[in-house]
Length: 278
Image (tube, rainbow, N blue to C red; front, side, top):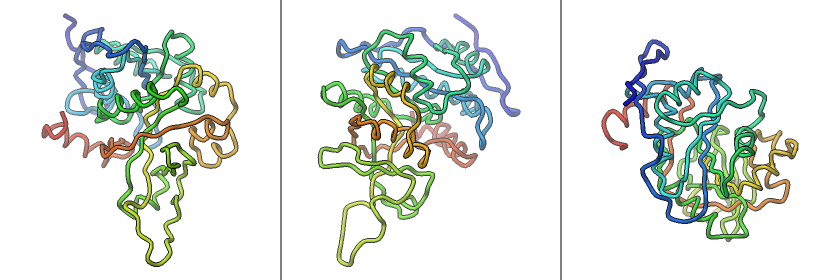
């Protein structure tokens, strides 16, 4: 068995634990689904974010292991533009693929890898969500697999805090009666201004950045130039809507914790260290 290696990360020693090359689960259907985790080294707030130490393991390993636990995932690959991340992934027994550095979005990076694969569905698992629930990955996948008319599926949850509705760092989504996305925005949608006497169960929907694409759809989107609304909102999923693709959503009460700040990182470390999240 390969011995654990040690890598330094901002003064912390990250112990890289080897894992089996092959996932221990068996897919429950014949559809081939590959989870790809886009991981960039350069981050404005947290440089080297995928390699940050969370209770003895790098963040990217936490994400990788959770993606492996999804029952409908056939394989997992990290798509990265930096050899340091690739080395760490290979060190714990994972699969990594080096990509170009000039991609404008995570989905474009996914598409570069997907062109080399033979699979039916590609799942975009965010590299900065080390506590992503494998059951949510399966739920999004199941929705896409069961509906032949759907080309992309993502996830959403209710917003109950007014501050989240007004926060531009939290992406909102409005959906139709079928649960298909009508629009994504950093602004408060629907409007936070409600007429007197109007009530609703939540203030809106928070978008969770987990996507399942039919492979052909992902490759087609990568060949389309960034669209006006995509550029205005800085949201890559708007390219799909502007191009006429249907995006269905799965509602959940499980909200992944994205690591964008030092406070987020400290919160995740506390949850993992206390065993609050397995």
